[in-house]
Length: 113
Length: 110
Image (cartoon, rainbow over all chains, first blue to last red; front, side, top):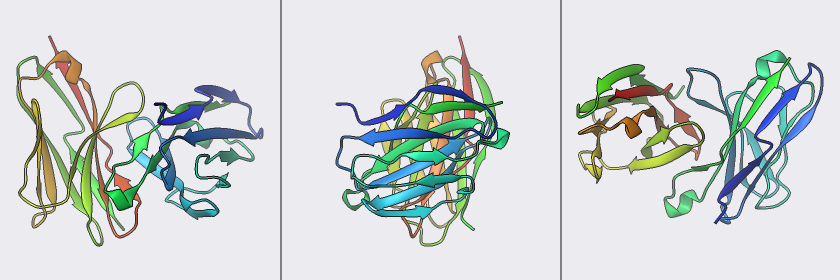
């Protein structure tokens, strides 16, 4: 039972490079979320999706893009990496209509140098 | 703007102590409050509270919500070194988005 799977676990990027953080879930959850967590801080919502084809901005969306072509997958794209995007990124999913909490992946630690 | 404030931000105790972690919130159309435990990796779910005054309990951990005063507490009795973690409080308002506090870092020394 995999739950929420994120890849890669670690990545170092140079300023200006682009990359995609992958997230997939096998629980048939309709809602998916991307958060970032900076040291000593809680989680801040970047983008979320209420179902395939529907996405919306969270608290800190600048510099990121998302897409949701299937129920299972919710990739996060960084187009022009900046040092301020150095963080740990968590993907989560839930089925709120059933009163379920969000389930989190193990995170991607991203450093931009 | 929805807001969650946790206190203390960090706490160091000895094994066997009892600790109380606090979470106060301001949110539009409150729906639920959640507690998560975060060790090295992903936050893991502890409790979800939706009704005021009802205690949720799991082993040595318990939590209660006061919707009138807009806060929740998480209690851990007879702490163990394995309880060392960051404890995150989050609230869900009118949308399905969660707003997180900064967390309380708990260190339990042997």
